[in-house]
Amino acid sequence: MRLKQVEALMLGGILKYLIEKNKIYISMKPGDLVIQNLTKIAKENNIQSGWIYGIGAIKNATIGMYDLKTKEYVKKTFNDEYELLSLNGNICIKDGCQFIHAHIAFSDSTFKAYGGHLFETKIYAAGEFMIDITSCTINRKYNNAIGLHTWCFMNE
Image (cartoon, rainbow, N blue to C red; front, side):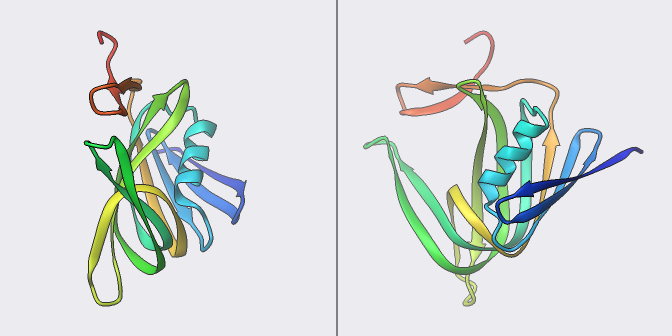
C-alpha cells in the first residue's frame, strides 16, 4: 500500500490530506471552510467524480431546501457551534469545473437536529472527511424542468 501525504496552504492554515489509491482522507482544522477546501482538493487532484463523507464539529453553516415551485433555495444560516453528524455528497463536473454537491445533518447542544443542502460551513473543532474517487466522469447539465444542474450521462 502506497500512501501520499499532502500539506496544502489554505486560508485557515495548512490543510492535511492523505492519498491512498482511489481514496483521499482529509483533516480540517478550526476555521477551515468545508466546501471551499473540498473543491480545492478536487481541482488539485483532477477528480472527475467521487463520493464525499464527513463528520466533525462546525459553525456558521448555511444550508438550504430547494423549492420546486419557485425554483430557488430557501436558505438559513446557523451561527452557533454544532456536531456534524453526517456530510454526504458527490463531486461532478459542472460547466467544465469540479463541483461539490453536499448535504449535511448536524445537531445542537439540546440534541435537536437540522439538515439540508450545504452551501458552506466552517470547522469549529475538527473535521474528518473522505473522498472516494470513482473511475468515470459525471457531468451536470441544467435541467429546465426543475431549475437545477443534474447528472447528465453521455447519451443525454
